[in-house]
Image 1: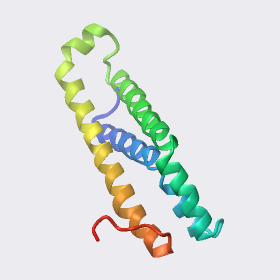
Image 2 (image 1 turned 135 degrees about the vertical axis):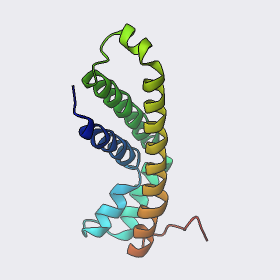
Image 3 (image 1 turned 60 degrees about the vertical axis):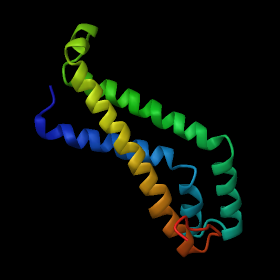
Length: 132
């Protein structure tokens, strides 16, 4: 069993990892310009092809897969290993899963549409702010 103090940290890592995975359609152009690996126009074109192409949906699917597997490993470490254990702890599993999913979606929205957008605009990427 995992100690009580380690539970929020492992769930926080799960939420953060899922948020970053789902933001991978917008993160590479910012990283490329930030470290001088690409011109602004090339990074913007690459970001557009990632965001408007099938890659965005692949990253979303990978994020949900990461969340599902992470929650499965999390509950296994908690001692919920059989279907009978899962039925007894059904409310806890459902509440934890929904909380992690909601936090991951909120983290994705904040990371993509606030942090990365602000940094991308400041770096000169031709993005329009959603709040303008």
